[in-house]
Amino acid sequence: MPRCLEMFSEIRGGEKITRVTQLVGSPTGRFQRKLAHALLMRHADGFVRQSGLSNILSSEGMWIPPFVVQLVGEYVIEIAADIQAGPSRLDRAQYGSFIRANPVFLANTRKRATIYWNCYYQHDANGRTMLGNRSWISLK
Image 1: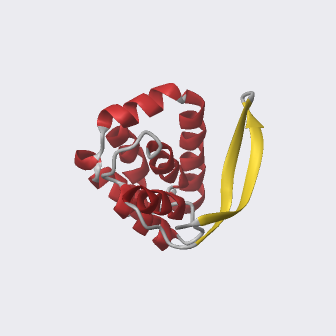
Image 2: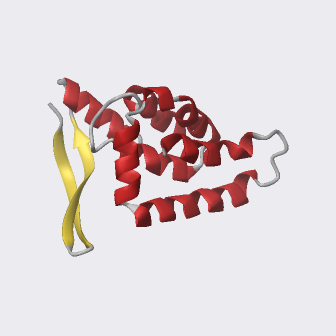
């Protein structure tokens, strides 16, 4: 069973939020595996993030949408394509509820996607640049 080595706490909107910064061990149960894949979606390596996404994209759980929506904001073309292809597997009500309840998070994530697009893909002539925008539509 994984155990937490380090945690970080901060205050956001008057609430204390505690995040795990380092885990050791292997996940054993179904929920633990889902959680491990969600945490891998925050990995520095985009291929690891994409693998975590593929293992969790069709999962249900009210804690999953923030991980997936945040990936759209990072605007990695291959990950945006996976998210765009995944809506038939997504719980639309769950994602819609998360997006409606977190307009500031959504606005900041969209801004981040726009900045990434402007920096890395603006001059990409093969049409891949629209995937991020289509991914937003898919999640709504």
